[in-house]
Amino acid sequence: MKYELRHMDRRGSGEIVNNASVGALTGNPGIGSYIASKHGVVGLTRTATPEYIKKGIYVNAVNPGLIDTQIARDVVSGDERAGYRK
Image (cartoon, rainbow, N blue to C red; front, side, top):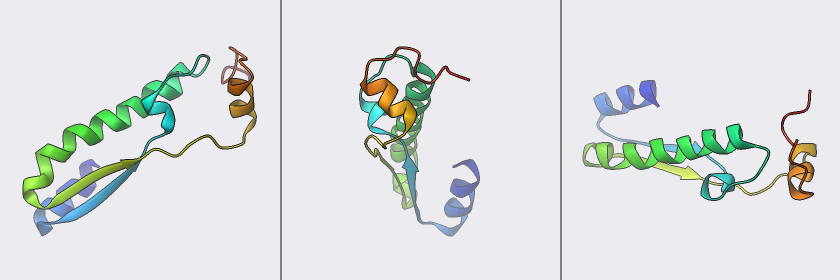
């Protein structure tokens, strides 16, 4: 966003859509680092929005749901080691 915002600020308008996760709105055991990073994306988006809206720059985030992957299956099954396997 740092570089996008510089360009958009000079131009006087723009739109940014950040990719977060439904996990940013909840929490799940075993994937704390992932959840923390997605909370960070949402926090950054919520901070940038009021800072740049008056400059004609809109910042939003999407929060897609669960994707069928091994880690997702492990989380759903309650495997607390999900995301920590090598």
